[in-house]
Amino acid sequence: MPFAPPPSPSSPTRPPRRWADRAFGALAGAGLFAAGVVFADYAGPHDGGNVALAETLSVEQARLLRSELDETPDRPLLLGGEAIARVSRLASPSVVHIECVYRDEDGGAVEETGSGVLTRHPRWAEEDGRLFVLTNRHVVAGAEGQSGTSRIDLRLADGHTVRPIRVWTDQATDLAVLEIYNRDLPAIHFGNSDALEIGHFVLALGSPFGLDRSVTLGIVSAKGRRRLDLGTKDLINQDFIQTDAAINPGNSGGPLIDLRGRLVGINTAIASSSGGSEGIGFSIPANLARRVFDELLTHGRVRRAYLGVQLDNGFDRGSLASVGLDRLYGARVQVVKPNTPAAAAGLRRNDVVLNFGTVEVQDLDHLINLVSLTPVGERVQLTVLREGREIPMTLALSERPEPTKQR
Image 1 (cartoon, rainbow, N blue to C red):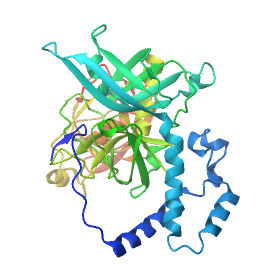
Image 2: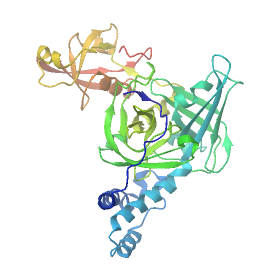
Image 3: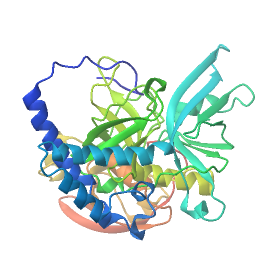
Image 4: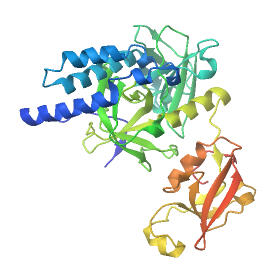
């Protein structure tokens, strides 16, 4: 099944099944109520001034609403709908519609459309209010290096169309950051994507087919999706959130948010046999996006730590007996490069890295992401399986000289 930046129409809807749909709706509403209506316990300074909490239900409001709906059989559904409407209303002004026009190799005009989300960097938010748009690199990549022959137009919720002052991009994650002149618009706050669990409700916002600030509802279907063939070898940092919230052409770069209005992902691609939305979408986790955002603004590029090893792509279930594992996890070292952190720490060929810090390593791509997200220079504890024995070792990560997957 191909994976691609979202393209094409949705499948036809099935005939209504009134009793089943009503029962499912009530259950879904009950879940949404439990997850997202009573925000009062979370609406404090510890939430970082989250924009979507500014007008959430107070304890008294929630009590009155519950009281008013006590005699209504659809009460859970109505409560859930109120939660979604409130978060959608507060988050939608942060969504940006993007149009990128550039010249192709033959000199013809090409137009790419996508979405983005307004955010601020904590370092500058209180100093000069710098405002940024976070989006996918593939939405704006055509305009790179074509000064004077290309343009990026950003259509904002206040009705204005602006152009970025500056653009930063990162091929390895397919992320881009665009700075715009400060405006009186709400910027979304980052959530903790690691805290997401399978089954959590999420909303995807964007401009599918050019329809500004559309909202779709779904759940987190899976986490840690890697090795997706997205048509480019440059995308080496893959750790996607999978969701069934509808993602279509124009949604690329738009936000995936939780029911408290926090950014938990950047919508990037779909899996589809028809080219349309089939309920399998992929979003870049907010924690990865936040690190890239910080690196681009601080250093102008993304500095990535590395071990200095080449990992074994052929490490599979057939290899378990030879290394003494009873289940498949970890990443096997194939080559240790000289004068690298791995060499200095004493890593050897055929060592299997089982743990990186406190995290169990699932596979080589998981290890690559864990290393890449670790600050350059940080000392990390590894657990390595060598000749049937688990060996702890500590190494200090240095900066990767080139962005290649051969680590």
